[in-house]
Image 1 (spheres, rainbow, N blue to C red):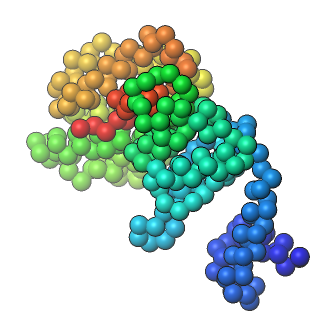
Image 2: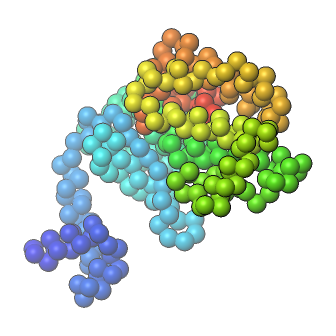
Length: 297
């Protein structure tokens, strides 16, 4: 028994292969011990109170070999893990949730994930009452929330796209990619000097304005409550006309329009959550999925 306790303790902190070598046991025995105790512990768990979950995939090893992990965001605990990263992983989670006292199609209020179409499809098919129906608004459907990392990554893509286009006529922008994309705290002295020079008003760079929009969007996540957001979202009156000179496609300009009207939306505070930027509702389609982090193009 003490041997198994030691295995369980060390397994939290290290991979099984070196653990087996340290214990002078074959790794298959270590796996059997772990699987037995994990299964025993999970058998008694109750998931009936879970309302917010987060799902993401991680690479198990080199190549296309992934494991999807689903967590209870309120209790900060892992609920389920399985191989793969497609819609079927959500189906498996729904079955496991039901096996532990949950109601997969009516219980969850929010699902946080990346922008994977597979995860979004899985939520609509297996965690909603109106599976496969993206128009019907009756019945329960959890709010889909895109996590901050992937949302900001899309904003960074937009900034870099503007920089690359503008660099064709403004050679001073060449070899400055990471100066624009890094967090301010991670900039080198040379990169800080580059930005100080490039962001001068006299430069009148489109990239500077795109980066400013991205930074303003990042301000979403620094607001203590949703009620503090409306003032943040009101753009100066000259911003929209200036978009035409930014080399931005219509989808980007329409995104700016959403910024301007969000604070007038009747249920605005309920549509923005501290854990991410919500899809308005999964059954309304992806056209309202993001504020500025939609796939630009």
